[in-house]
Amino acid sequence: MTDTPDAESTEPEAPRIEVPALKLLSYNIQVGLHTRDYGHMLTGMWRHALPSRDQRKNLDRIAEMMSEYDFVAVQEADAGSLRSSQLNQIEYLAARAGFNHCGYTVTRNLRPVARHCLGWLSKTPPTSSETHSLPSQIPGRAAMKLRFDDRFDDLTLLVAHLSLGPKDRRLQLDYLSRMARDEGRVMVLGDLNSGTDFLRQHPSLDARALKPVDNAPLTYPSWKPRQSLDHVLITPDVRLTEVRALPLAISDHRPLSVLVERLRRE
Image (cartoon, rainbow, N blue to C red):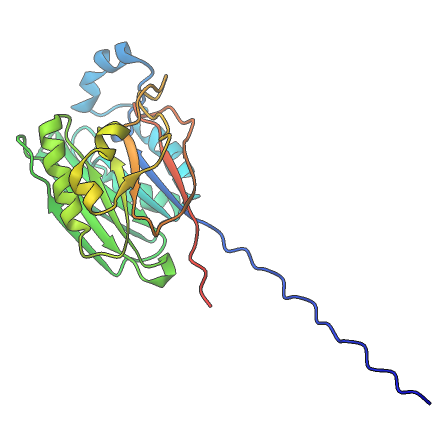
């Protein structure tokens, strides 16, 4: 009788678990004001000083959109004043959209009429949060640095809203580069009021290897976008799977949606 060798046993491969991407959003909300064209922007200037009837409804629409994201950088919000009917818009958006963690800094306090602020919303708590005043001829620009642990892929996020003037913006980008100097995986999110070429050619960003994405989406003006003013800058160890402007025309800017590929951990 001849022995027959045992058939080689094979075990089915373990199914590959797809790790969902991190979903981030940056949005200049223009204090919840709807703008449909340049003429409407001019005739509606009073809404930046007095409460608007549709402002709360617009914020509710914005919150519904934000609820799908893990982290949101918010520019041009109000921290509670006459024009927002004393509503802290960052805290309101966090509550309506289901974020357990949020923060803000008042960048220009014009009480009682306005309290300009910069803020963030997150479903994962940061391990630390810092606020920095940015250099500017007219005070009122800031950046916020948030560090996260492995629950949010050890990212350091910088949230910023830069000035209109190119001289100020160069100084502010120098400052952001210094903020990112000793960090690991870095992303900058916000209304940078700059085109892609301006950012790509900035020496301090280049030295820190902070780069804008190719073919950055057009975000301004929201009703007929012609410019890329809202950006995500990343270090080479951050991989993006999608960057797009969302078709939501409430503010004068469109929201910038960013999907980040998760790190694969053993």
